Length: 465
Image (tube, rainbow, N blue to C red; front, top):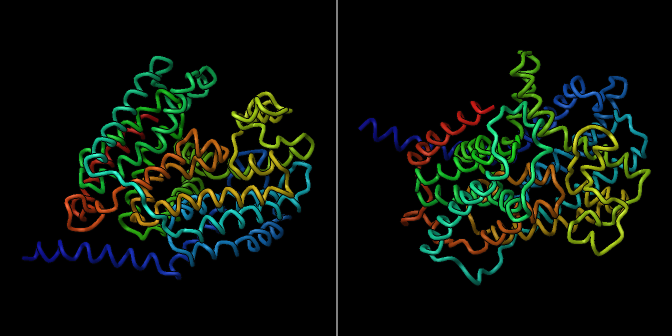
């Protein structure tokens, strides 16, 4: 009898936590804490990265700029969850970091104009990305049997991509050795596209579907396949994608979707801040370097670098897009990441839509307009996923925020498969999410069992590093 009461009590407690985490006050506290930790992290990063400066004499300017821009964060407190919420909060964090770094930058460009342009770009992107979320009429939907076939096809396609790509590269090396081999990597275009789409979109989507269908063992298969992309691509993103997905999964089971989206960025960054301040050793430096520097600070720094370069070099007018380059005159024959590496010797600087489609393509004055257009594209994702459960949308898109932070918008849509995910959301059978049916949402006990199985995979990725 006692066991029965406890089992009934656990879901009630979880539901109360979700409701509490979704209140406006709770979201306000999380967002404010996130802004503070982001600035503290950037101040710490300045001690480890020479090109990310910090000067206490200019601290009051940085704080004033951040406070002014932070008013934009009110949107995240009052709007409901959507795909745009997930992407928008990541990009808001990146622009917040740039506005902080902009006050300490050693580069010679119009910092006042760059800050205003970045803030306007973020706001114009977020308005459609957060506010347009009315559902579209579903003309076609997969049947339950069709969904089953598609999920099996996804797993076979991912496995086939891994096998085919292994003939071109397969190295079991530590993460500190990957840069010794990264420049030697070559894949034919079809394999290159399939690698990005399968690892970023198809496998997380398949895992989210199996979770929704209560297939707890099948849900671990996509996680294993995601991990197998590391020895092929030698990418930190591939190595930690399984761990990242599990973190999002756990947070989505404890907190409401908006709070989970915020915490998925806040908690890893907060842990890095605590570790580097309290326990300075090789492991804490390594974690801080991967999370706080590479994942969080580098995309913001890329905006600083792009502002400097294109203040004295010709704009691209979108000629960097691969299918447009043969059709127009372009001042740069190499990819922009290679151009940045040759100019600054800081590694290959891929950058987000604010730097690439904005600063590099049209300059500071017109960058907010391109951000607005990108926001409307994200709104398409909102509309096709509007009738799906927030947890499903969050999990199936869990690996897209890092992609949008680090690559151009068109690359995230095409090479990393965000456009394909929009189509998959549109054709998803809505009936499978109705409670009480065979394909309903998993209950608490089943979900916990899935998390336990998935956590074992997280240990594999940590051992691989």
